[in-house]
Image (cartoon, rainbow, N blue to C red; front, side):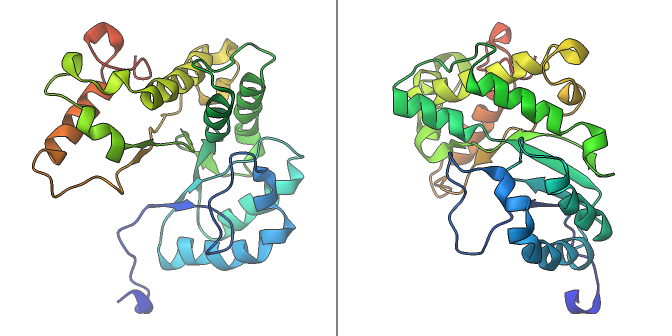
Length: 242
């Protein structure tokens, strides 16, 4: 029935505006390039399909530009609106700073006010202010980096306190990055990203390689979600939901 105009039950689409077959943007890539004239023909093709044929009204965008003039990506928002897509979920380019930690052998991200991480996040917060989105509404925000549960689920135990997952190096690095951005957002109107203070944060999870045929897979995933949603004070693994 789709060809006859019937809407699919899809409200949001994750959109990575580059050619089919290209790899995901490298951590060092410049996100702005994906929103300029070079890819305009793809946007004009894809956005009407998403908004009118699929009938989705929300785009989760990765990557998200934090530099360059507003005019360089305002045309993209106009194309979104004209296609009936009125909501957006921007993705902060966190993968770059995770890659920096790996390349430099760091156990803690650099978070001082002059660090590239802090400066980029402040720019991200400034870039999602309502007046810069061309009439499109930001309904949530996220990051472009997900935990790979294929490696981590086997470490999940029967309780948050006895699980070995929180001892995994990749998990520790990931959580330190997430905790840093949440501290910056927690400042509210006086923080470095006031536009994000009242907007939900979505934690991305890569479940594409979860071995669902294993008997304990679903149980471990449920425990993972439970522990991730509990604060340290409550015996959980995270401060991002406090």
